[in-house]
Length: 288
Length: 288
DNA sequence: CAGGATCTCTGACTAAAGTCAGAGAATGGA
DNA sequence: TCCATTCTCTGACTTTAGTCAGAGATCCTG
Image (cartoon, rainbow over all chains, first blue to last red; front, side, top):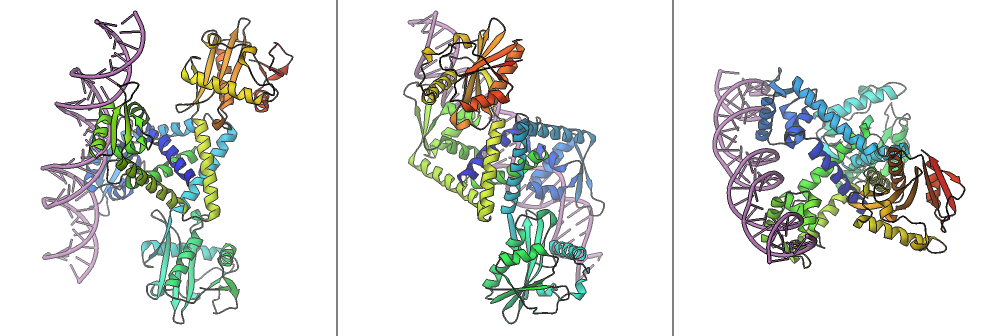
């Protein structure tokens, strides 16, 4: 804990100096950040507003200012003329690459005085800190199963099963977990969020005899190793206890080894098949 | 390098949210930071100005504001009435501890969602990043040997030799490196700085036959393992080359094992005694 | 095609952050 | 004791950051 605070202090100090002196290039910080956030690919006003968490009046004014410096152009989006798309002009792109260079320069100034061994150690330690801070900020929430994020997760999940199962995967042949069955109070669909990006999902399907079924457990490939699935499972169990369910059940395919070891380590024990799921080879149960 | 930039981005984002929302307590950030920087031990206006890098007019106004909220008292320092000492009032101390609690709370919010193993790994990785960033920001500069910092280093150095040598240490019996001999152009005194704190020292004494002597190599105990001595030695060698010296020589005591291994790994080879230094057991030389 | 919803923009603000040129008191050395 | 220097403070500013209430355009749905 002391370590966390000391770390924060140091890093804020070092990088803060950076932000203000290096990255402004004689421009108010707000404008500099905005320019950087627009980036070479452009963005629309709406995204910028949410990403930088700016008041719409203020953002508009910043855009006007960058526009009058001929750094950006703003024009309506073709498919929805209420929205406006912001792109960098040639001059704007030049400024952007200048920022990039500066921030590379700063990164270099951290690495350059170190020996090669120290550099490697620093890089490794930074990656570790980054992963774990990301892991700490994962939030699991119940979401409607028909939301964009939920559909995205499920599509990814099915696609992955199709490649991993020896037999391929056809959702229609599998035991159901329909949107209705995952909508409260029949069931619950959980999404693990890393900021605004879904990093995994899972579902709890309640069944009349106070037995819950765990379904749709999936972790996004780029979020593996952070304990996402464990966090989702934990959320499901907490919900199940709130609902006074007595037991949780689930089935899984033999190719999903990491899932099996998660279930075992979370206290599930293997039981005889309790349903006829054609894709399952292992059935698990946990008493709550 | 990519890693460094991603790391900076992430940490700025996470801790930035912190600073603004957690640490303000309904107060402008400037005032909050100032209060925090004054701390329970108090500080003088001058130190605050340099530490927070504030314009003196602005700082004065911030102090007036905290004063009118009865959070601080400002009074002249006894020994120099131009300077003014700032201390927290009872109410100010209460506010300060409230800030402390909040920032503990934030640290907890990073650790709390993690498993114990993950927490340990995070703490270790943070400590590593901290050490290496500190190591990267060490700056070695030539300083007058009669400056406060130089005298402080030398005093520490002598005190340490006195405890480490089996025979104790009396500077008067040892070969000289007087202030005059370490003042340009006769010689140079180097201090390694971590921010404004001296972390070690070393000296180059030039001698008429274009041979340099390395003297007074010392690293502060709390800065060991960061490569401080290596950086100082490197600075000395660079200077020696600038001066067109042909060789560097040094002698050392058998109890200073870490020093010997540094010299060997830096390309010094052991030679026969070239002087009668009573405290030396090993003599080294490097051709430049 | 009417009416509500969505999106961005403008005008009119306020608050915070920061600069600059002195004024005035205290100090240190010639 | 005088004079240059050091230190903090004040008055008079500017710039940056941010808010709020609409206006006006566009879109979606019944």
